[in-house]
Length: 199
Length: 199
Image (cartoon, rainbow over all chains, first blue to last red; front, side, top):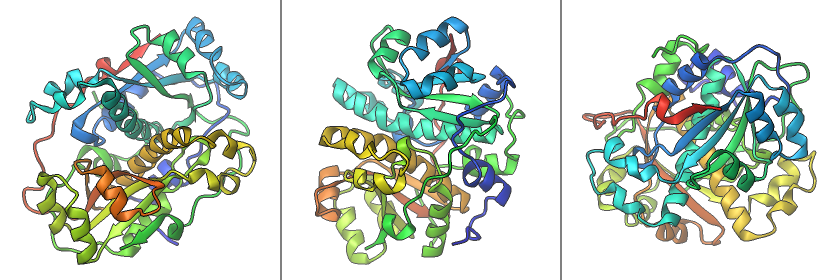
């Protein structure tokens, strides 16, 4: 099945989706703060429910912080994270509702939907995941490869990096130029007819 | 702050993020199955944890199905959904783990992580939201506008469209070419320094 029906040019399709892959090794080339900011300034426009923006990004740059992170990762994720040029912790701030009067100003009552913690956590997880997806696309838009991981002790990461108890890690993402043997073989995707139905 | 550090061309940046907006009105121009399939064949490559693919898409095309959907929407979402050229229900299949031996074949034990329903629901919500984000980007890649909504009676939508009790709606998305006065003014985004920190 072709993607001729798309407006996005084929090179961009390849860059963002078709040839982009989850990387497991990286070159030594650094990833600059300017690159990360460029990624954010693009993907911040991705839509969420009531424009809520729970995503927070912690760039792990110091050797000390990297060690603190790696200890909470699953065994299979330790070595590649120790060697990656940049690692970002993607988390949500479960107190995101405090920002709603600013980021969703035309509906002053929005904040009141989230007085209960479970409602906040559920909404932060959903909209934070949307934002995490946009962020990964943004990493690729910068010509970089992302290696998102969910194999870690989440409670350990939360306590180590978010002392306020109000943040929940969503993913840890290695970022850089892909190195040697960066990819596993691509795993199968479900067919269109397995995913899409019409009523 | 510029996005000069990106590799993705400026037209694609605009198409997918900077000029793309959540649409509230649409023209009458139809959205074809071929367009939807092209979107899927592109965004199916977006990464998820253990390549799980919980997302399911129900295209609401018949007048009867549209009525069945609209009755469960919040008042503010009824008229625009009745008038949209295409509406898609994005949901997750909480039984996605049954597919893991096929879609994540190199780790036969993956399915066993999800023997408990709460673990499945949590993972389906997270990875389904990632896939929903990719899908919205794909709609824009097709030169169309997406109008994602979360204002509905979720239990009502689930019962109406997923009789098996194993699916959970994530979002309802109107899709088409933007019509007159399609956009609200863009709401503020958090600044880079409010979102990204370095350790």
